[in-house]
Length: 271
Image 1 (cartoon, rainbow, N blue to C red):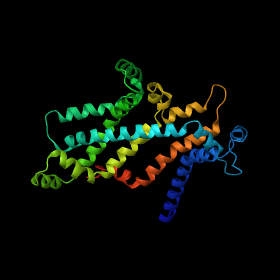
Image 2: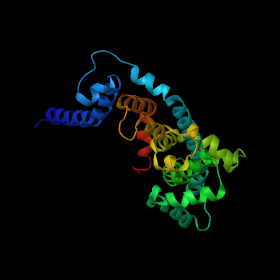
Image 3: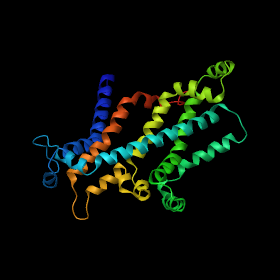
């Protein structure tokens, strides 16, 4: 086969793969624009006209409040994850101290623990400490987000030229200033990768939010969407509208930072 034919087959394969992954999202968006009763009889039909009643129903069902709660929880959690993992990654990448390898390996064992395997102990701990709803879910989000974030940032910090750090030390900068004024601006691709990965997980996480949040006014978006589904009937139109609203922010973030994410994931892959 010629090179042009191989390139054409490769592009065709990528296009088919993209279509497979985009099909559920396309069906969700189309379904959110159709009346709820037609979704049961003709689930694969197309909307005859743009119908925003499902979005109105979702808004009347407090989807705006759930969206705000998810935004607050996600932003605070991601900010804490980056704020805590960046100094740790800098220390493991640039500082030499006794037991650094052992401590780093201990932190990475967090990647081997299924997050929801500790659901019951965390629930008992939160009940004993009587913490609020937001703290009850932000704490586990940050704890389980630190291992991967530290690993990715450390891989990027190792690639930063030593000359930059030496020049900053000559200018009288301490390690804290070197981290935030030298390393972090250079490591924007890695930071963007960490932020997107953690935000996607926190934004879509359900079991922790379902178990730990007690007040309905504090519910996040995944938990709030359950309110549109009753015991015997579900408002699928409003559910699909809510899912569409939940997906759009993450899609926008990924499209904006796509190049940074690719660069962050490939950091340290080539020596």
